[in-house]
Image 1 (tube, rainbow, N blue to C red):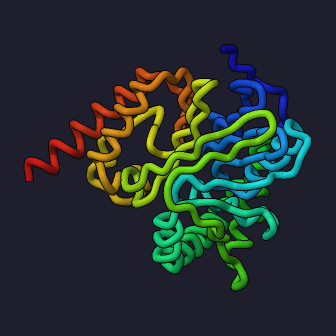
Image 2 (image 1 turned 45 degrees about the vertical axis):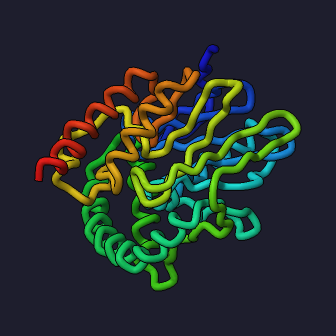
Length: 282
């Protein structure tokens, strides 16, 4: 199977066609953030995860329309972390956003704290970015900083809010189109209290959200924020092993480049060493 890097103009991600109708938006190295994807099923266009920066989500929507020739039919949030659903607010209300019940409840439980945290970050970052841009001469960086200024200014407005998922699924399900189908598989309590993956069995491709990272960091063990510290390390490790043993060739992580089985093995060993064993020894 040949992965094709596509010609699409954006500063935020590199766009790949993994198989006909299956696309991955992999964060550009100069702007490390989360990954996403979109799928053309024939009569449906599905977006899997939205992106942290609203301008990157704008580009994701633009790419999906360009390459599928249709408006997004559904959006799927793999889990509740902000870097995978901040861009929800860029979609019209008539576009359903799908998640599992745990993702919605955890999103709602954390919403006030999330908004307050982002308003605090926005104030600091707005001041910092306004100073940096005065000295910047590189056009791409100027564009990035101007977009950041717009985003931070919007966050500081009283009317700013995040859009929650609004179409709740309990368990796994299949979206079957006229040309292809995707299995949306409920994992449950692993990286977060509610995780889901998008699996194309015939094409041997899976979008794993933050169940998989291209790179791991031992510092995650001592932190609860940033997000990579899992809620259930054993379930996460078991899931990585389960999907490593499946007949899959292409793994799309929540962060980092496209992965192989080797990276799943490294992730499983990492969580075993730094979370399961350490917590068992307490």
